[in-house]
Amino acid sequence: MPRRRFWPLPLFIFAGLVVVVAIGALVYAFGTVERPRLGGTYVEGIAGSPMSLNPLFSSFNDPDRDISRLLFSGLTTLGLDGTVTADAADQWDVSPDGKPYTFLLRRGVRWHDGRPVSPEDVIFTCRLLQNKDTQVDPDLTSLWQRVKVEKADGESVRFILDQPYAPFLTYTTTGILPQHLLQDVAPKDIAKSGFNARPVGSGPFKIREVAVDQVTLDANPDYHAGRPYLNSIIFKFFRDDQALASAIAANQVNGGLLRSTVGKDAIALVGQNREMGLRAMPRTSYSVLFLNTQSALFKSKAVRQALAYGINQEELVERVAGGLGVVAESPVPQDSWAYNANAKRYPYDPAKAAQLLDAEGWKVNPNGVREKDGQPFKFALLTNDDKLRVATG
Image (cartoon, rainbow, N blue to C red; front, side, top):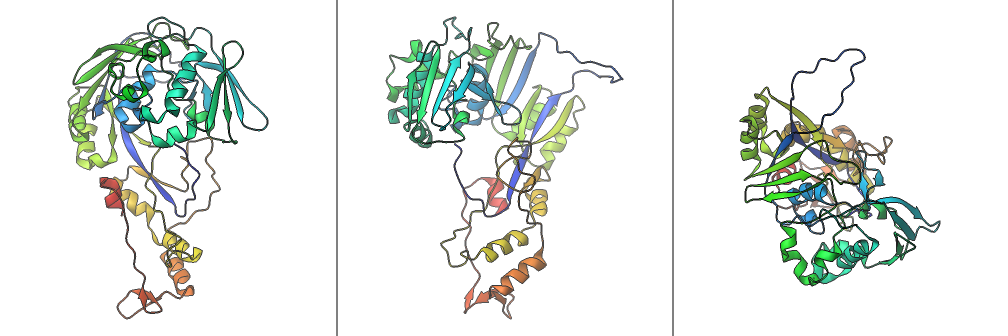
């Protein structure tokens, strides 16, 4: 969930690879207009497998998140640039003090079983998010416990925050659950409910078949935003990125998302398939170096800036991510509406880094190590076992 944080150093966003089908040869000429056609099946390869297609738990697993977004509708959704747009809610209103939010549900939003989505479904979903027994992300529960939810006039739902919180609208993108199918399940049992394997949502696609190695979705003809162009989507699951890369190269799938950790050889293998196209895309995640400002080493802003100038970020992207990444100047992606092009930058400048450290009293001793008052400039880096982060460290 979004949090208020301070970012002391430039960040690194590592790209994944999206492999898409090259469907025919398109000739572009002046006046050419492309129009989508109805029909067809798209086969998507995924590294990993789903654990729960319930949107309340999908944040724990990428395959769950990818599939559940097609099965469920939230009150709102996110556009390509990260802006919040309407989904199951037709419109909303925020009070001048930034606390009450009132959402009017769109007419014609229905569950895949034909029943209408109601304000009671929204309230039911929020109650589950507020309940510790539901076993969702504790940070998510903590946020929703500070929100009062109630039915307003007609088909409206009102949320009342205990204090203004600018990112709140992004939390209303969470998929709404059907009360009529889950109201008899205790919150502590939701996580192991059979609903999570064959869920009923209100999104653009609905479950047709669930198997060990794949999930098949069919277009929802009654989707409130219009029927999807595709007839169906098949998600095929593979052991890891290497297995997925091999499947893409062998035309076993139409496309898939490869993380940069897959390695240059696997990417080159995929690139040899002329029926596929490779496209590098930044992920909405990054590797960041947090400095403990309570440490004697990092209390000084000049020292922190020296480390920023002393890190060759471009080289890290090339060596660690195989060049499939971009240097980020903030935690906000460059294609987001919130990106600040004027954010402070720290280009690689070892001379400036040395100058700052010298000014702070960290001098180079005869052994080539910087020290101050007899203490060497030395610290430990801690990370998890993610290969990218280990290599970055």
